[in-house]
Length: 178
Image 1: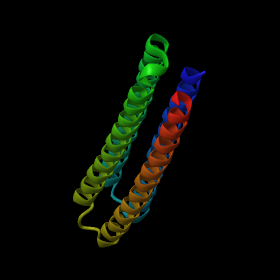
Image 2 (image 1 turned 180 degrees about the vertical axis):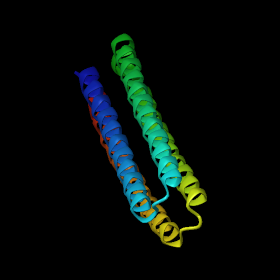
Image 3 (image 1 turned 30 degrees about the horizontal axis):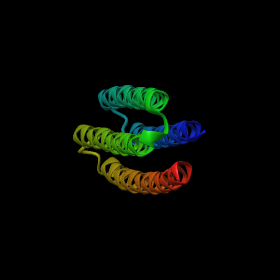
């Protein structure tokens, strides 16, 4: 019964992380699309518009890769935890909790970092391409601020969720092993 509870908690933690990661990525993609739409509307030069479209394609590809990597990592964590639970049972509940927590935090931090890097690269490229258009530069700067605030807020939410889940896991595991 103890092992079952641990497995369920591990799955819940991993699912929460994957969902939050996907939400972060979706928010970033939406912001990038908004910035691109603003640029395309304001700037009428075909070359600039082509460059902007290429940048968006690159960002989308990177974002998809990030999501896939996160899902693979989460699946790997689940498999490892299940194997450990089956082999060692309740004796290593605390070890399992530590593994899950480390995996969750590492995945979250890595995802947030990658998303921020992608956004910064997009913004820098767009600024370089359309540096002559003051209106677009202002729009991009505003978009960067919005992205920074959104990413910061999401990261804070993720950290809070992880902390709460970890506390619940530890408390439940202590109750199980007691």
